[in-house]
Length: 293
Image (cartoon, rainbow, N blue to C red; front, side, top):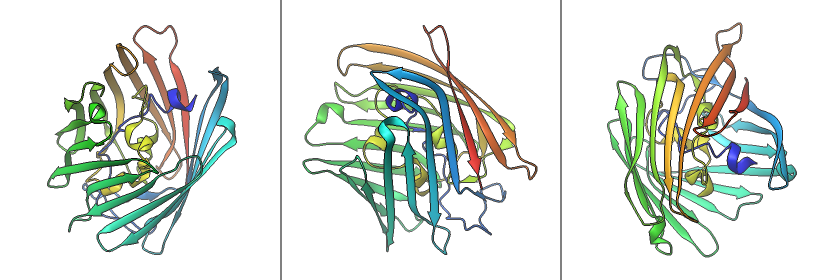
């Protein structure tokens, strides 16, 4: 279930680049526009109970812990899928971050940072595999990332990010191996709603990629995307994703995601309602994200 529900997540994965390079603290920290960052303690994601492949799933919960500098140090991920619980422990060193994953994954992630505290290289190390992801920037904006796995070159690919003002508006595959997906993602925003949560929880409700939430599968949790340049300034309203996949046979999908929001009495994001519909589907897949501060 998770594979399809979060899977229609993506690289934004997406809002892939939706994160800020400066690390905020619970009492401080601003976005490019000067808005105060609201530090999130946990989020609950719920879906209508469904059964796919014999697996039932109707909720996911993420809890966050921070150090005195306001940096993420631990993420606890609980999922009703097979009662799965996964812990991400995050360690900071000079120009490097290490993520240990304790749960159903067998990965360790290492990230190299530049002088602006942006990830320039990510390495995901498994027992018998090594995947590298290289990042390029234009100022604070993520411009591209390239995935390289020497043992599976047909899955290698490069994705490009296009910005309009302070918002990421398009992601597309520019170069790819024979089995890598061809992806095109277009994003619209609410002009008057600002994206102020830390971590950037919009990373968890952009349901876009059907088969592999690539960076998640490679051992990188969405919350750490604040190390990959600035976040989009506004909250996303609509996302249209087209995927052409040759992995396991030719497949062509088009997803449209509509997102609406409600806010608490302090003006903070409270609940996001997400509705994603595949082009030929009769009903959309709906979910709700509740934010706790």
